[in-house]
Amino acid sequence: MIVFAVFAILSIILILGHGGGLIAGYNTASKEVKAKYDEKKLCRTVGIGMAIISVLILVKKLFENILPAAFAYIAHGIIVIDCVGMIIIGNTYCKKH
View 1 (tube, helix red, strand yellow):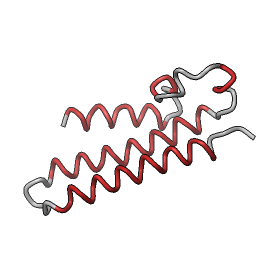
View 2 (spheres, one colour):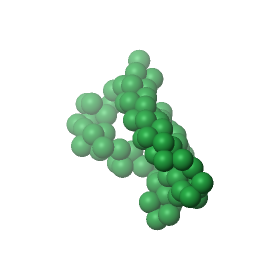
View 3 (tube, rainbow, N blue to C red):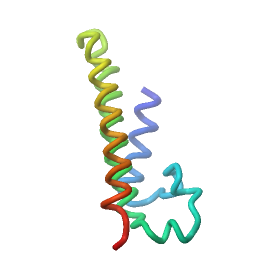
View 4 (spheres, rainbow, N blue to C red):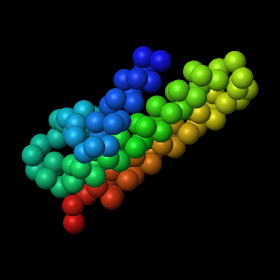
């Protein structure tokens, strides 16, 4: 539940458009590279992705005795797809034109 709480708080901060320094790779990028990205869009994209992961963590914890064992594989698949989606959207939609 602590992991869920941390992820939920971070996703709310990111969805609000703040916390760009929490995004791996963006926080260490040079000013020239950062200038190519819309920070608010990037924060929102990562925040929504983290919110999806947060909900999955919560569902897994609340219903661990009810859900079949196969749900763990499904949840991990969704997390992988979510991460790939965040990377693709972050490198396309979030770039300034």
